Length: 134
Image (cartoon, rainbow, N blue to C red; front, side, top):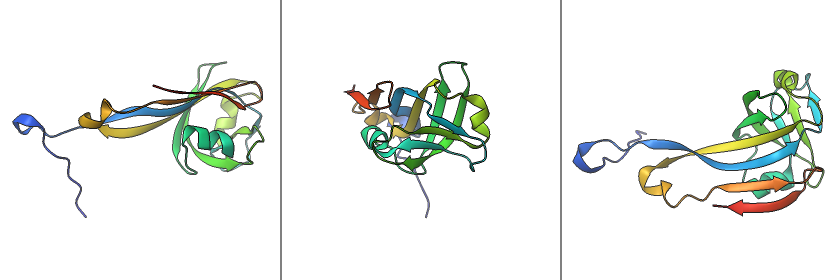
């Protein structure tokens, strides 16, 4: 199956823009498991609030030390507050660090204006305290 992108005016091919789709802001790392085979485990309720799917790619930024890494999401128990950084990335965090978990999507120019960013604010126990949409 071939994939094509419609042309914009003047025959210029349309582009897809990588846009921030959702983020979980200032989540607290509850565990870091070096021996687990990659990923970040996120409380199912936080996943649902942010609209994240299991296996989805996310960018994780550590507010304590400035590191960033890309990984994928696995589901944690709902209501547990679990935020566990797994595998090699466990070297980049400490339990108690505040992190931002970001998910991006690809949009064409026509859809960018209608896009609504979803921001999940959490308390110190990783419970949703507020949901913002811009």
